[in-house]
Length: 341
Ligand code: 5MM
Image 1: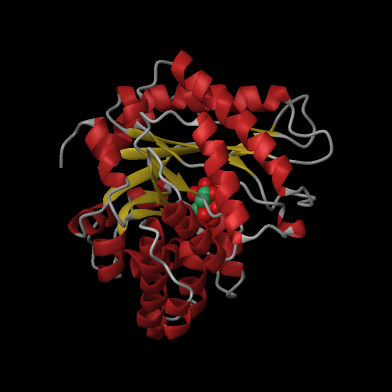
Image 2 (image 1 turned 120 degrees about the vertical axis):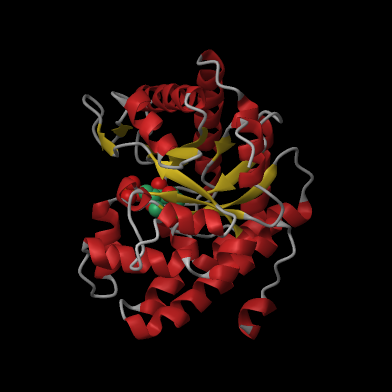
């Protein structure tokens, strides 16, 4: 595999492939395991992720890369094989979440700033040695009464740009993830509000990326879709697709090779339907694919339930979701394929 940032970025959004976001931090994976009544330990986290990474068909055919949490990057499967080697053997690329989380932003009640820039150059060098060829940093923007503020958008955008520049210096492709939340409180905004905020955020981010001298050809954008709040869902699949494509066309330069969406609290099937609707109905200058966490994992997590006898069932569920999203990435998903399965 070539070491050029441009080639890695293109491989990440290869036809019919997308990213598996398996970078839940320790507190997030605990919340996920709580839903199946499983304790989160180093071993249970290993077993869960090993189930996913050993789902051969999914990994080889549909998953171009996996975003890992630091623990997983250095972790080994039960038989001692490093996870990085398992992922590479499937022809997929290991990546690493490098931000240290969204923390309350001083002076900005209800908003967060993502931390992790101090010492990042040194950490990136270590992650590169460990095999990571792309990274991810997530800035979080909440919509509520009077929010977001310009102060929080600007601070998060500048942090994303600084992070992206450091990644490229280290030979690592940055995934730039500015997430406008659909499931933050109160989650009652309409789709027009989401469009307005997403456009504001993306315009700011691309200005800051330019100012930071980030090479657009060597990055991937991971945005939210333009969608109404989780507690006010009304927009149809076609409306979400139309509004999302409109905002992206207005803000994302065509030099960016690919856009890989987060699912952000959409149901698994919604996330697939929206992606497919965009790819089937619009001509776009970039690849549009998935970088889903929950939308790729939820059904697999439930089918597995933390029990070794259910590993095959969990892998089947994961493979099915990955295949459906692969079809969506080429605009050829149909709802009856879900029922058939
Ligand atoms: C998998 O979750 C990622 C990390 O979350 P925490 O740092 O809060 O543990 C998250 O950034 C994720 O990669 C994206 O939000 C996409 O996941 P979803 O579930 O929204 O598709």
